[in-house]
Amino acid sequence: MPRNVTSQNNVIETSFCKMIEFDIEFNSFISEWRHCAYISNYLARTVSHNRPDSVLYSNLYSSAFNELLEVAFRTRHPAGVLACRVSRDGETDRIELTFPCTPEEQQFYEYAISQTQGAGAQERYLVSLSGDVAPSRDMVLLELAVDYNATLRLEAVDADTVTLVVDLPFGGLAN
Image (cartoon, rainbow, N blue to C red; front, side, top):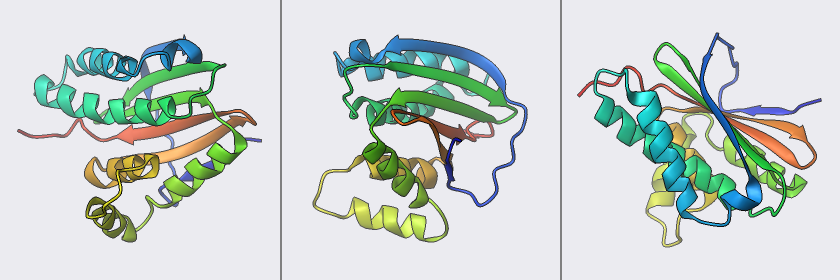
C-alpha cells in the first residue's frame, strides 16, 4: 500500500488536467547534469504559453522544476525510469516525478517533506540560508514550500521507486 507524506494535514484532490507527460531511462537522464536544465526549460516554456505573463511564469516554473529534477538526479541510480507528468487545475500546476530510489532515500524524502510543514518551515529555511554549508536536497524542498508556496507529498510506488508530487500555485502571479 502506498505511503503518503504530505506538507499539509489534509490533501484535497481536485481535478487536474494532464498537460504533458514523458519518461526517460534513468541511466540516460543521469548521464549528463545539463539534462535537468534542458528538460525544465522546455517544459516551462510549454506550460507557460497561456499565462498572462508567460515569461515570468516560465522563469519561475523552470527554476522550480529544475530544482526538482536535480533532487531526482542526485539519487544516481543506474536503472529504472524517470517519469514526469505535468497537470493543471486552475491556478495550480502539479508536477509528478517518479524515479528510482532506495528505501533509505525514501525515508530521507519523507523526513524532508515533513520539515516543510507548519509555521516553523520558514524559520528552518532562513536558518539554512545563513549556514556555512552548501544547500542540501532537503533544503531545496523546503525552499519550494516557503518561497514558491508549494505543497509537497511523497508516494511510495514500491520498495525502489517513489513519486514526488509538487503543487505550484503560480497561475495567480501578478507582475
